[in-house]
Length: 433
Image (tube, rainbow, N blue to C red; front, side):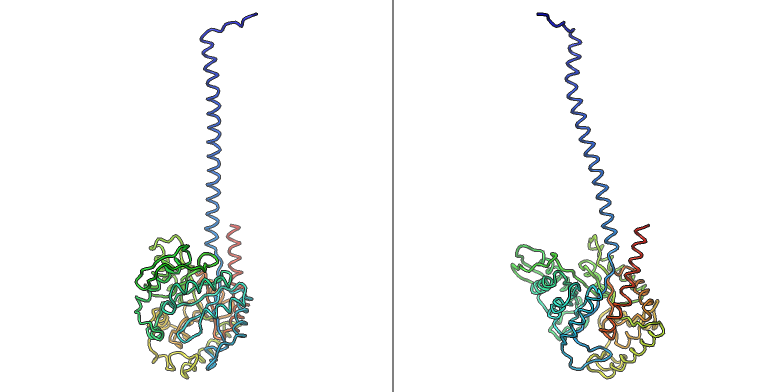
C-alpha cells in the first residue's frame, strides 16, 4: 500500500495552528455579530423609546382644554330666586342631559351646610348621562375619610369611572360651625391634607392598614370598593399659602377663581413651585372659573350685564333665598374671611374692567361670595378671553351664567365649539410644523 508523503514538522504545526485558529475566528465573528445585533437593537429601542417619550410628552402638553359647568337642582337663580324651591327631578335630569349633549366635560355638584347631599345628586346625574364627569364638592368635616373613600368609589363604579372629588377646606368659621366644625383655618387645611392621603391609600391598598394621624385614627381598614381606574382625580382650590402647598403637592387639579391674567399667572406659578418643591414630576391641572355674560354683540352684552347687575343689587337688598350679604347693602355685609374673596374685592377696587373683558361689579354686588367674576362680550370676545387663560396654562374652564340652563345652552352652542376649533387649528399647525 502506498503511504502518504510525510509533511515536515513546521508545516504540520502551521496547519495545526490554522485549524485551531479557524474555530476561534468563527467564534469571534459570531460574538462580533451578536454584539453588533445587540448594539443595533439597543440603538433602535433607544430611539424608539425616545420618540415615544417625546410623543407622550407632547400629548400631555397638548391635553385638550375641558369645560365645567355647575349642577342646579331646580330653576331658582340668583336673578329670579324661587322661595322654598325643592328638587325638581325633571329639571335636574334635563339640565344634566343638556350638559352631556353639548359636550361639557364635567359638572360640579356644590356643597353648603344647608344644601342638598352632593352624592345623591351625583348618582342621579350619573344615571341620566353617558360622558359627563361628576365633581363632588366635599368638606372633610362632614364625612369620615374611610366612608368617603367607599362613597366616591361607589359613585365611580356607578358612573363607569366618571367621579372626581373637589375639596373645600372651609373659608368661613361661621359656615363651618353650623355643622359642628370649630377648627381654625390652618387646622382645616392640615386635615384636608391628611384626608387626601387616606383616600389614596384606601383606594390603592390591597391589604388592611392602620392610620395614626393628627386628625384621624383607625385600625385595619380595607375597602372592597375600588375605583374603576384605580384612583379618583382629586381637586383642591383656594388662594392662600396653605391651599397652594396642599394643592400643589397633592392635587390632580387646582381650582382658581377668575382674576386678571397677571394675578392668575402669579397663582399658577405658585402652585407649580409647590409641586416642584414636593418632588413631583407632574403638575396639577389648572381650573379657572368665570361667569360669562354673552350676547350677539359686545354692546348688547354690556347692556345685558348692567341688567344683571341691577337684579343682583335688588335681590341683595331684599334678602331671602338667592340673596347675598344677608340682605344688607354690600358695604354693610360682613367682610369675607377667605383669601380668594378678599383678593377679588381688592381687584374690584382697582376698576370695573380688567384685561380684555373681565368685569368686577358682580363681585362687589355679591360681596365676592364664591366665583363671581364675569366675562362680558360677544361670543368671539368670550372665546378670545378664555383662550387668554388657556395660553397661561388653564386646562379646565368652568363657566356658568346667571340664567343657569339657558346660559349653559348658549355657551354650549356659541363658546365651547369655537374654543375647541381654535385649539384644533393650533394643534394641526404645530403638527405640520
